[in-house]
Image (cartoon, rainbow, N blue to C red):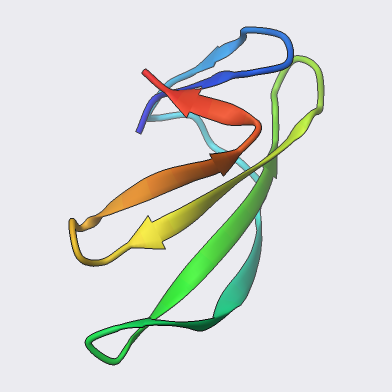
Length: 69
């Protein structure tokens, strides 16, 4: 998914590769499926942002540091 950094305004497109840290979201399940949170850094300002899996809609949700295009 394409996102925009809230800090510097950099656009990061769908095909951009990231190194990410993954963790399980405790206490959140959807029909027995675990939900994961990914921590990544902006390519320009190195500000950290987080996204979370959304298995109900087969997508991701932006949590902190970015907004969806």
